[in-house]
Image (cartoon, rainbow, N blue to C red; front, top):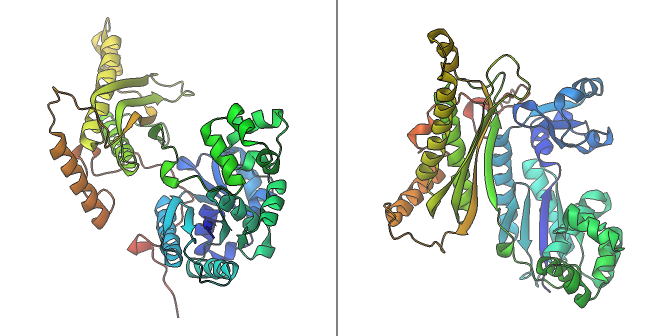
Length: 442
């Protein structure tokens, strides 16, 4: 029988923090976004207090203190390292592991016909990963990816499953569909679920009971695949899932922002580099680059400037240096235009004030207009040797993969990090920095 598993780390960010703070087990914990702006992760205890996702930290600071909630700044180096440990352990339990996100992975159990009790096998997996990493996980096993994801939610919600929910019979499938709201089905989404509720579809069972002809006439092929998956017919491949239509890397800068244009350029170059890396991971090339930067919308004690510029490339690319160069050229040209327009008609004293750059509070880079890297329409007059460029990109990525992130980078990114975000509550980087390793006293 074809069976797939979905392993999902429970409250992953909060669980990572608790791994090195066992005194926080059973206590409310929240994790904040960059610059300690909003709440982006909550433990079950924090959810029970009514703390909502995305709430501004400054609005809830007093409430968190009054209720003894442990607060942490986001520590992505720690989370990435812990994710790697979890995935490495999961890979030992299946011949095929597909990492879906930082805290989720699909496992293929189809070849395990010789295992008499797949449920017990799943419970062993959950127990070992939790014990070895300190990260509790939930495992759902079912005939399709969509049902496996649904099963993992039941495993997380009900402790009686011991961390593993197996949906291997039609009776179990029907019962699960009846208990599952349509808005929570993987691949449905908020907008589509609103349309379905309007048509009387409130649960996954309501949708699965519709005829194939009805689904074809009312929805897209993608939704039809979801309908088939809910009815136990596997037809979704992870390779076929839609890729991102755009990739954005941005950051809000601490305090008043960045006034030094050189530091702003380094930030934009770093953002462009990270965007290009993410784009290569999904094997795409971009046709358009957008750069943006702006001063604080609430500041009243300085000049105001908003930058938003887009440029179409002569040929799709995934090269970091080319993308970074385009982004920086647009940034520089917009700053020059701003300065020149404000210099006109000014005396010498006033010009000195204008030449002092505004304090840019936020900046970022967006790559969009993606095409597959193996389906690029070449430009006859392209002056860049694309084959040589591709070889260089692969060599740099391989060096960074073996020796660490950003060991080799373009010079415009600089060597310092003047735009490091606020992280007043960040924990130590226990697994990636030798100076932060836990010390045991005997």
